[in-house]
Each structure stands twice: as C-alpha cells, then as structure tokens.
Amino acid sequence: MNRILRGIMKYREVQKVEMVKQFLKVKDHPTPKAVFFTCIDSRMIPTRFTQTNVGDMFIVRNAGNIIPHSHHFLDELTSNEPAALELGCVINDIRHIIVCGHSDCKAINLLYKLQDENSSSQENRRLSSLCSWMHTHGSPSLEKFQQLQIADYTKPLIFQAETPMRKFVAYIDPDNKFAVEDKLSQIHTLQQLQNIASYGFLKKRLEKHQLHIHALWFDIYTGEIYYFSRAAKTFVIIDEGNIEKLLEEVEDYYS
Image 1 (tube, rainbow, N blue to C red):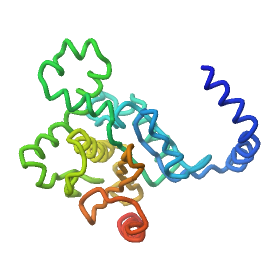
Image 2 (image 1 turned 180 degrees about the horizontal axis):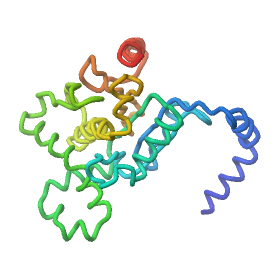
Image 3 (image 1 turned 180 degrees about the vertical axis):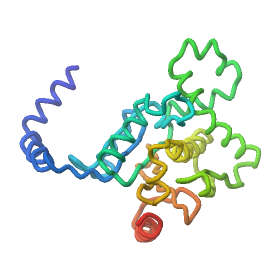
Image 4 (image 1 turned 60 degrees about the vertical axis):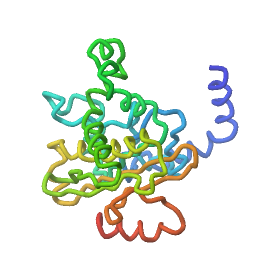
C-alpha cells in the first residue's frame, strides 16, 4: 500500500490537472472506439501499449481474458463479460471488440496443465476457483490445441467468425517461435471471438457488419504486439513493415 499511496501523490503532482482536463472534455460526449478484453496479469497495461487515453476504450479484465460462451448461462445476460458487451456495443454503439491474450499467461499455463486428469479432477476444481474457471471456460481452447498437437503443430485450425456461416482459418505459430503454452494462448484468444459471436443480442449487428471482432496477442518478454490477420491466416507482428498492410486489411474487412 505504501507504493500505491505514494503513486497517488505523484499522480496529484504530475498528472492530475491534465487528466481532469481530459475527463471534462469527454464528460458529456465520450466516444469510445473499442471494448477491449484482456487478462488481469499485472504486466498487461493495455492503455500504455495501445497509447489510448481517457474515453477511448472500455477495458474488461479477468483471469485468462475469457468471454464465456453464452451456453453457460440460463440467462445470457447474467455475467460481467456479456454485460460489458451490452453496455459497450448496444448502449454505447461501439463497433469494435478486441480480445488480447499474452505470452507466459499464468491462467493459460494452468489450462495447459489441466490436460492431466488429476489436475482437472472435480476435487481440484472444488479447491481452486481458478482451476474451475479455466476448466469450465477454457476446455474448447484445449480441445483445439489438442487438434494442433495431433497435427504436429503444422495444420490450420478453423474458427467461427461473426456468424455460424462465416469461418476463418488460423495457422498457430507457423515459425515455431513460442512455447507450447503460448501456442495454446493464441488459440484461446481466437476461441474468445467465437464465444463473443454466441450472444443473441449481438447477432444482428454482427450479421450486418455493424460490429467487428479482432484478436491481439502481446509477447511479454519482447514487448511486441501481434494482430490476427485473416488475410495472412496467422498472428502478424505489428511493426513498420506490416502496419500499412494491416491498416488496409482492417479497412477492407471491417469498413
């Protein structure tokens, strides 16, 4: 707490005046451009690596950047994540949803271990909220990962896109740069796009291309950020060499 309180004092000295100006600027007419789902990992600071500011994004964080599939709820509106989707995309008419996973994710590392029957046992799930959360909502990601394992990590996976009739192909880490847990993390990030599309209150907007879903992936130890390119069928690094192609793709796919 000492560090937190001293940090607040530094904010008062250095940033408060400018931030209040920004709050007042967007007070009556905030125009957020995205709903951004990411992990609670303390190393993930999305406003910093996207250089966004007051009023730019709704940010939703949980262990493992999960958006539960709607079939988990008798009433699909009874969880924080769909409530955030409704608040952002229906009430505030935000047009872009972004899911951002990351490397060395402790929740995903646990999900990888849940392939072991003892780790995923009912007894363990009763003892651990995190184990239960990841087992309940991460199993589809694990199933796709096991498909990739059987194919020696070389064959593509198929994911549902905005509607059941729209699919996209994904090659996961084709250059084999990342650990197996990170490959699972990328799969898991893409699986959340499919989960988002399961909510009925988003159906018409998705069908009419009024709402668009994207995936980012952050490599903690290099600081590099990847965008899932449906054209390239894989996660592509966002850098000086790729930015124009990615901007053109976003314009073509999502305009």
